[in-house]
Every structure is written in C-alpha cells, then in structure tokens.
Length: 254
Image (cartoon, rainbow, N blue to C red; front, side):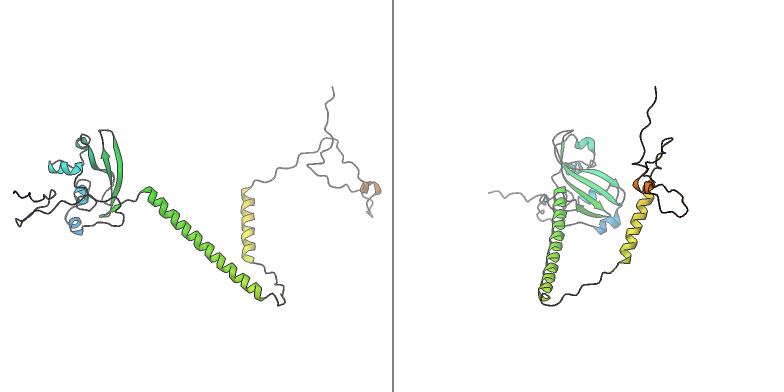
C-alpha cells in the first residue's frame, strides 16, 4: 500500500533537515482585530516602501496563502501587478492607500471579473505594525454600547443622590425648617452679563423711529385739558409713542 506524500509547504518555506515539510497555514479568520504583527528584524534589514511592503505583509497571520497575489509571486511577477490580477478570479489583496513610510492600507477583495470586485476586509500597516481595521458595524455597536453605559451610570448616580436627599428630608420633618438666605453667585452674574454684552454686539442697532407727518399735533388728553401743575405756567405735552401714535394718514387731494 502506497503511503501518501508529505504535505507541501507554502512558497518561501524550506526544509533544510530533509524531513517532511510542514503543513501550509490555514486561511486567516474573519475577525482578527484583537492582534497585531510586527517583525522588527525585517524592518531593520529592508526599507518599508511600496515595492517591498507586500513581502512584509505576507509574513503576518493576516495573509491568505491561497490568494492570487501568491500565485504571481510563484511566477516571479510582482504580486501587486494590476494588469495580471485583473485577468484572474478569486481572493486578492490591493494596495489602496500609501503614505510612505508610515501608512500602507491593504484591501482584501474577491474578484469575479476584470471590473467586478467585492471588498471583504481592510488591513493597515502603521509605522511597521500590521492591524486589521474593524468593520463599520462593529465601530457603531461599540460606540453605542459605550454611550449607553455612561448614560446608565449617570442615571444610577442621580437616583442615588435623590434617595439621599429624600432620606435627609424625612429625618428633618419634625424639626423647624429655617429659611435659607439667598446667596448671589457673582460668577454667574458676570457670565450672564458677558453673554448679554456679546449678543448686544452681534445684533444690529434698532432703526430710528419714522418722522411725524407734517402739521400733526398729538391729541389732547384729560391731563392736558385739566392743566398740569406747573408753577411757571408752561404747557407740557405727554410723550407720544413713535410707533403707535403716528396720527391720521394724509390723503392726497384731487
């Protein structure tokens, strides 16, 4: 009975002792946001640029050895050659954004044709450390849960303080309640004055009142008919409202 051949290793991994080759690593999982990868020895040996960044990314556990980029590497073709990747179908990695030498963004996508791709995951290399970017739904869920946590904590704190106030009030029911003196907070007064002054500077000044019609004299009131108590005998007219007391409208004569 023939024995099965030993498992093959992924490209780039050799066996110098003549023993059976190690098994190929499994494809990475979907959620790997809790880990990061960094190879300081590689970073000290090679520059991190757009030409060598894919070789560095292939060392990480985020790399899928079954992708089309790995097939191009086996054929001694640059793994990010778009002219070759567009002719293939399957899983591939694309360099989406580059800010050498600090930031490199890789996008994992599934290609079904030359112009048809489906984005799957995003990875980024920040100052030599490789991370998996979280999905947008996970970001929203984390932030909503954090906001709900702080809201519930605020309600718990407020309810505990209200319970203490009610307990103190129940103890002081039989005692005579002394009226508390009203205190003035000068900081609040200055703050309100500052707000009113700023609003006064922003708002335009009020328009001047319209002029009175020619020949108009305000109608005499009861106080003017009786005569004001003025020892000098000078007649005083009550101030007229510039908006209400405009007098009768003048009509044109034909």
